[in-house]
Image 1: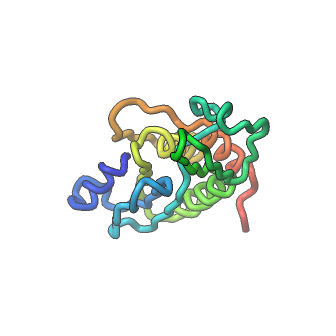
Image 2: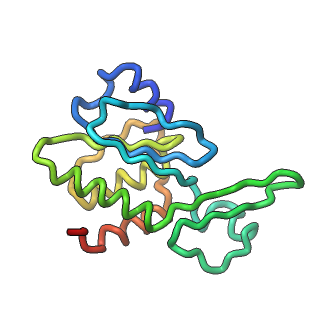
Length: 166
């Protein structure tokens, strides 16, 4: 789901599942999170929709090794214009996995709603990962097919492989 769809859903609760948990992902410059007080539980994370193969990023950043921690880059896009990027990190993936595992253990059935700015990359990566790992049917509401963020997909896979905390 996109941020716009999530904001619209906040104003008409009938467009949302009756009982749901919510994962919200936005970058620092992507505004405020839509407020969905009707969610059973909410996880809010801030990181940008970037990965190692983002167009031109490897050349611009000059990084040979991309660490799995939450890497932050400051790049000169053009004279006088600086862009700050926060990559998804393994800690973000662990938070998502722990949140989804905990919600999945509840006895009461629920829906998982995930949104990012466009509803096509970060949220798609989370939804696919949860669907594969927990066997939950995926219902896509964002327009278009989208392309899951490959870095986040890799980190989520790694986080699912780690033992669940006691």
